[in-house]
Every structure is written in structure tokens, then in C-alpha cells.
Amino acid sequence: MKPQTSSQAGTFESSDVIFLIEPLPEKSGRKIELFSTVLHQYGESFKKTVVEMLDQYEMTDVHLIARDKGALEPTIKARLETAIKRSLGIHEGTVI
Amino acid sequence: MNFEDTDFRQEAIDLENPFDVKLVKDFLLQLGFEFDPSEVECTMIVYNLKGELVGTGSHQGRILKYVAVAPKFRDTTAFALVVTYLTEKLLKIYKHTFVFTRPENAVRFRGLGYTEIATAEPLFTVLEFGFESIRTYQKYLKTLIVPAETSEIASIVVNCNPFTNGHKFLIEKAASENEIVYLFVVEEERSVFSFAVRWELIRKGIEHLSNVVMIKGGMYVVSGAIFPSYFLKCETADDIMQKQADLDVTVFARYVVPVMKIRKRYVGTEAYCATTAAYNESMKAILPGHGVQVIEVERKAIDSGNDGPPNYISASKVRQAIKEDRLKDVLDFLPDSTREFLMSDDSLAIRSKIKTGQGRH
Figure 1 (cartoon, rainbow over the protein chains, first blue to last red):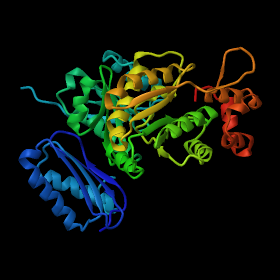
Figure 2 (tube, chains in turn brown, blue):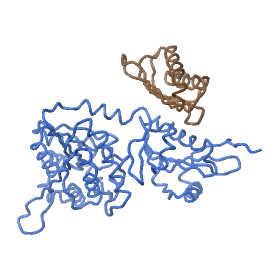
Figure 3 (tube, chains in turn purple, blue):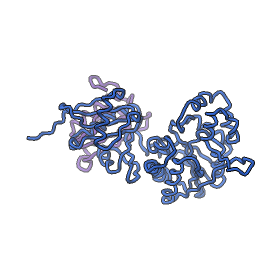
Figure 4 (cartoon, rainbow over the protein chains, first blue to last red):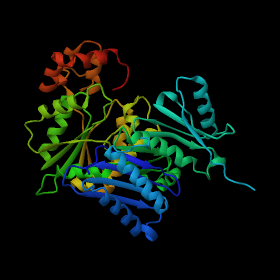
């Protein structure tokens, strides 16, 4: 699916993560910038979670920025799902 | 047992309400800030259910200001709350946000994911966060690089408010002495002549120079984010202004110079304005360390016909003349493009703005 608008979800707080998503022109691919305070320990699994969810929503041309302060996997998934749905304009039940 | 009470509430305050303003003002005063409500667009506070003020933050445009948390709450999430609130709001409008803070506090913003751009000890550090960053600007710069055979690559930064023969002289001189001249035009919309107008007048005025490349200054070359003093009054040069000038020059030296392989920077001598004079000082202090020679060119003067002091060309004199309705006196200062523009009806709105305005720009 193609993101419609730029969007964000999450906070800068400890144990949370903030995601920013921005649509890119078609065929430009994914540009992903992950920063995490626990990148050394959990960077791989963090990356995997993000890529899997982007795959699930078939988002190919997207600029994604993440600033993580040690969020647990369910938190990461929830924040990313919200950011994706907001960017797709299908965020039923979530406040913009 | 002691437990952390993090049941914080956040709220934007009403800047029109003197009680709200006083609340924030008193709070910030204890922490060493002089809160000036005219310098912000929006202010938010964080408080708890005991009615204690926990922290506050404001913004003006895309710049975060007056972010502070009471000492007693510094172990809590309050600081992240304030920054999240402001960043979230700003990133809906702008592509990125800036923070201007003291170097010792920069670590707190870095901890949240802000990236440091430059520091001018001991007063300022600039950090940014968002969809775009200084890398985006560097990418834009890379698209404009002209392959050079020699190392005779020069740069000039101009605001041109408006474009005068003085600017033209400086650009022509640089163009004749170098293989390539990169001309950075300040993009910030804080001058009476809009960026589009300034850009167009310069473009027309230097059409005959094939080795000059015009570049937008973006958010990084003399911008309101990094060098706000430039757009304020210019009577006194103080530490704050000098340090902001340092910051601007450092950003130029660190991020622009290596990409464009710039070896020289041309500037005009400054006789009138303390801000620009301070800016020239910063350039002389910082740029040579990055392999950039600063070439100060004597400002061009109009022959006044007698032995009086030289009549230097200056854009501020042009604006003054417009204000006093005696454009005729400064026609010698103006290249064709600017003269035609000022004589035409296209400039009516700008001229009337100058006549009623009071600011330096």
C-alpha cells in the first residue's frame, strides 16, 4: 500500500519508541533510519520487526525514522502499526 | 514507600492570558530564563494533580524554546513529555525541528534522538530532528557541484535585500578571480524583499557570469534557526550575536565547505552594521582552520565628486531611501534588474511595507 501522508506515532520517553513515516516517490525504495539506545543488543530483532511489518502492509516506497529508547517488541509493533495506519489514512479509532 | 508520581497532565497555555503567562514566567525565572511571550508562538505546560508545575516548553516556527523542567522532576519522564508534545506538533507542519540550547544541556536532547549540528562554546548548541536533516541539504548541494579543473573554487553568501551594485561588484570580482563561484542566497523569509524576488533580481543581474552557480541557503546558511540575531537589530555586538555567528560559520565550514570543495570565501568590508561586522570576525577566526581563505573586499563606493567621505553602496541605504521616498538618490547603487523592479508596480507592496515598517530588514 502506498502511504498518503507523513505520520508519526510514539514518544521520546524511556521504554518507548517514536516512528516517523514519510511517503517517497514510486520506485525509490525504502529508506530506513533506526536509532536505538539498545542497538547493540537488540538491533537485529528491531530491524526484523520493522521490515516484517512494512512487508505486511506492502509498503515499498517509504522513508521511516525510528528513535528507540528500549521499547519492548509489543510496544514497537503497536507504535509502528499506528504510524503506518495513520500514513495510510486508515487509522480508525486512533487519534491523529 | 516512595513511588514516582508520573500522573502528569499537559496543556497548551493561553498566551493572551496574563495569569497563564505569569505562571510560566515565574517558573522560568527560578530556573534562570527570562521568558518573553512575544518570542514564542505556543507554550505548553506539564503539571501534576497536586497543582505543581513540572515543566514547560515553547516554540516559535520550527524552533523549540524555553524547554525546562523543575529540578525536583528531572528524574521523571517530564522532559521527554515536553519535547514529544512540541516535536509532534511541529512535525505535522514542518519537515524538521531545531533546538537551540546550552552545550551542557545538549546531552539531554541527544538522549531523546536529536542530532547535534554544531556547538559554539560556551553558549550554544544547535540540534535537529525530523524527516529532513543537514544530510538532505548536503544532497541538494551535491546536485549543484560543477566539476572543476583547478582548486580556484570560491563562495559568497548574500542576502541581497535588495540586490545592489555592491553585491554585483563583489560577485563579478570573485567570478573573474576563480574558476567557479558558488553564490549562496539566504532563503529565510525575514527580509522585506521575499526570497523569490531577491533570487530573481540576482539571477537577472548576473546572467552574464557563466561561472557563478546560485544556491539556496536553506535552513543552514544564515538562517533564523542558527543565526537569529542576524535578523534583529544591529546596534550592538554582544556575545550572543558573536556566538551565533560562530555557529553559522561552523556549520558552513563543517557541512558545506567539504561537499563543495570551497577554498575561498569573499566578503565585503562592513562599516555600518555590528551584526555583519561580528559575522566577518567569525569567518576570519574559523574558516582558515578549514582550509578556506577569507577575502575581504573593500566595499564599493560611488564617486561623490568631492573630497568628502566615500559614499559606500549599501542595501540598507537603499531601503532607507525608499522609506523616505527619495529613490532617485540611490539609483547609482542599483543594477538594472533591481532598478527596473523598484520603478515598476510589482514592487508597490514591498515599497509600502518598507515605508511603514521599522525593523532592520
